[in-house]
Image (cartoon, rainbow, N blue to C red):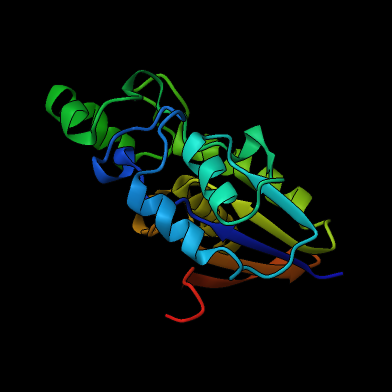
Length: 194
């Protein structure tokens, strides 16, 4: 049995443009929604469609024509605790040592939320379940979730989490069987005439 998972990052939102810790309620901006609608129909057919529970992921899924996507709590982005709603600049100005520790120590959670290490473990458990699913799964997920999948698939240390950039509205594909995954990165979702 071969499992295939296509991870789609959400379209742009104000939080993304402002480097703000998203609290899950921020909607797509007009340009992001338009780009997602233009990319509808470019995705392969899937047996399963899931989505991070954030507004921007749910709205991206709907704009892509994946309105029946099932929200999964285990695919939520990194929980940033008391930093949610703030920009990285605001937090860095107020708590520079805490931000430095958070960016360099995957076990650190100075914001009172979730550590990168915990996120990677949570997403890894979901990936173990997905590996038992025959056919393709489409998952519209936060960039943090894509990074956590990369860490798991590559067997990389959690400290490498921040070294992967995940552009908006791109697809990262993995496929595998018997617990071994292959990776295909960063495919843009574009209308057929691009």
